[in-house]
Image 1 (cartoon, rainbow, N blue to C red):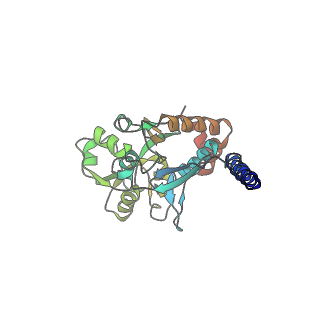
Image 2 (image 1 turned 135 degrees about the horizontal axis):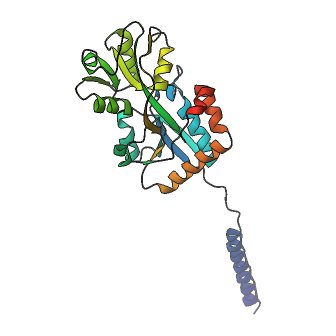
Image 3 (image 1 turned 30 degrees about the horizontal axis):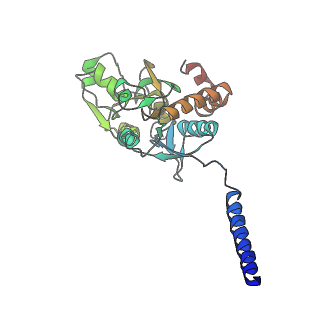
Length: 268
């Protein structure tokens, strides 16, 4: 009888210990910290002053600072990555990137492939050429005798080809390549977005060149490109863009990169 009483006591102790172990597991504290979301953002990195690569290999420019401001509002971590322009939309579509912030114009053709945010910049086009050489953009015959250069797959090259179908145009993978050939005499005229042209004219290579036309307003707007099925992210970017415009952050970035005069030429 004593042996049986002892066994029952031992079994009771084992049972209590087991129950105590189960209870300890169910009441153990859990990690409730939210996971950090990292978005991969593509930019060309060769389109100053919107996006460019510094001498120490870092990405900088209005697009980069805008991205960081938007991501701060969205409370997410963003990694901005350089991507060649011709491959930037295909890379987005394959899921390599979550969004493109790279001075990308809204066009019907691109809208068939990506979803665009609300516009964040209003763009105009210009011709640039040598200071001492006459130029008349209304004279097609004159243009036919010139070597006209532009970056491939841009609104500037597309606009030129549509408006001057009889004039041959030299296309380059980057705008820097077109500017380099202009500076070295391998091109006579470049058609470009205005602000990258103005930025290049301030360089050593561009010191002998000038704007050869007034602003060509084609109702061009820059926006963030996102995969069409990612409606949630599109909404978050649009809300963040509205927020930084409301709190003054957007205007500060515009003044920092382009000067106060540009505040009068923002998308409405």
